[in-house]
Image (cartoon, one colour):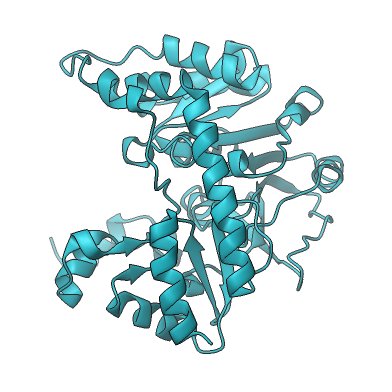
Length: 353
């Protein structure tokens, strides 16, 4: 098949996609800079440096990988954790898996989505792959978001705490957006355990609101790819019709998540340590307040130059140029252990002062 024929077979929307940019990993940096993986400090992917509850590793020893997953016990555990009935709980392979199924429910060619920027780039990818058009709304100087959503928007994507800025939506702002549109509003609360409050309760008041969550961040299960959401009954019913077999999850992710949810004290202890370190880092770096497990730091020099200098010292931070409307002078730094943060601060004092 010729190159021309191949390109003609592909969907035209692919030409508009900017690939998702993930944080750099240990292997990549070790090979590129000749640094041993053990000495690298990874503060670029918003992972939990304390990992999951010890109960998780024990649960993984008991799985039967030859069997298909049975998600019922997981859904029951998430129901207890959220306080919502099992019928309202949606699960998927990471929150991106949940969002993928939701956009297949609602978005068609020619539809519009509302996306305040900078934010998680996967909202844009999902919009374009559905044949829809994203309507971007750049945040103000203090990260404020305009509440006037175009009337004909089919879905709005809100992230709170927002990635990469770390700020949150107040309840009145979300209500104004819900009241101003007839579309579906997806509220991404991936980092909510690190914040002062959640807006999950609004699902009981608005039948067009879906709140997404993940087991990747506070629960320390990023490598097992398990996300969930709480939705009104009518959306949940359709989600279960359109979701992939077994919701795309695995026996391992089910066992790990159930174990992690049975040890909420461990998660809360990790969160408290991360919140304390977050404030220590913020005071020294001068970053804006954050309610996530990362800081959004403005740089004097271009962010790619700054990030590269940290990489040469074995410290991975995130250059935010890949986030639409983040500009050229911001990096995102995940909160690590005190020892990891000391490494970062030592380099920061030398490279950024």
